[in-house]
Length: 633
Image (cartoon, rainbow, N blue to C red):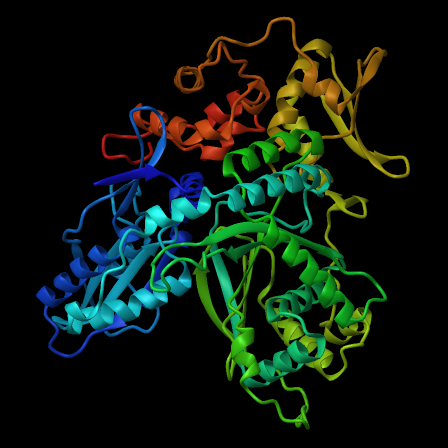
């Protein structure tokens, strides 16, 4: 067994996986189906599985916390990989068609501490082996690597020795990540995010969040006409296709909602050029891309602006994950709300392939005609997931969304609007964005959010904010309103229990921070029914320390959480009415805290919740006991 520190990328994926509720972890499972030749035996499949994992270090890697509390990757030596079996009624073409035991095996989380990040399921139809289902954790491979792995497995079933070995890739990745260039790039990225994150608006998409649901409605189009239009734009604007498509998506969303600022979390492929092209691994990093639709811009100008924003995000996508999480948590208190990034944009554009395909000089030879929208379901915790797939003769654009965000009618109209914007812009790159938005709009657009707009980039769910405060300050009369220009959010609170209410406000304000749309007021006006009182700023409320700080654990969950945090961090007695980040907590401790709680039989609080900005008492309230089998009670 080989041992090495985790790469930053591995650490970030592992942390994100542990932060995701178990029921939603399926979104990090990349699934591929492999059709088997007639007469394939189970022994052939088992031999192929063993050969494939012996070829790729990434598929034999587990993650652990070592005896010194350090996060490490453990690369096991070559050996057999268990192959599961399941019976189906018929051959399937998509993972969503899997049922019974096969579907359960696809959805069952991969325990990265004890399991290799690959699960192979042999699918039988009428007792005969017909297909393999590959389930690969995203930490071990990206989609392109999984597609390549699918071809390797198919070849290995027929002739295992035809697939050669790729040695020692994980050590090479560590060497590349720890070099001077990578360190300089990481330091630059942290400076960038430290300056930018405090000024970012907390919410850019003010709509209902149903965080307990992870099922999305997926709509997509396959269109040769769209591929032609993208090639035309690519040549005329001289911009990358991902920037063109993202600009069109932003314009469609602006037309639908009336909003002009959009922020996407996007995935950047940072695969080192020095690595063997056949190396299976994940080289994806997350970054934020934020851009504003400016009235009066032409489409070409807007694409240039979006492309600059994307390149800025790409440049700063590699940095120390711990420090970035610390920055995000600290800035939440300063901002008064969490940084909500519910939208993901992923792209598989292939500009090089596009140049080889000739577009007729007479284009467009036909009038615009929307492609047929196809539908499926998709598991993902994101609110909105947009993707442009690899472009050749046909372009595929998909948009997945929660039903709570989009009606089926608006969902279809949005996909058609993206297609129409691309088509119209290809005919005239100087067309104003306002004209494109109006042309692509569906009836009854824009659908203005029912939240309250504090300023151009600041929204608040006023009713939810008022309701949250009223619920936490039992017996107090709470009214929230806007005052001044520019508007500030003011909470007017009348209470008989003045001092206890002020103490409760500090706890309530911290617990408001992680909830999208609920904004900690800028000012609190506290009054007694008999008269008198005072006005407190947000910082006053956060800094207020009651005479008797609550240091005694009030529940078993609080006692366990206190013991774990104080042991793992080495800090003194913690105040459970404040957040962990305020008391010196750091992201580097989170995975150790997760496993320490699990070892004591507790789970239920996402990893990042521990760091903040909620009060530790609120974190403890989310913990749940597990039974002997690991199920939550």
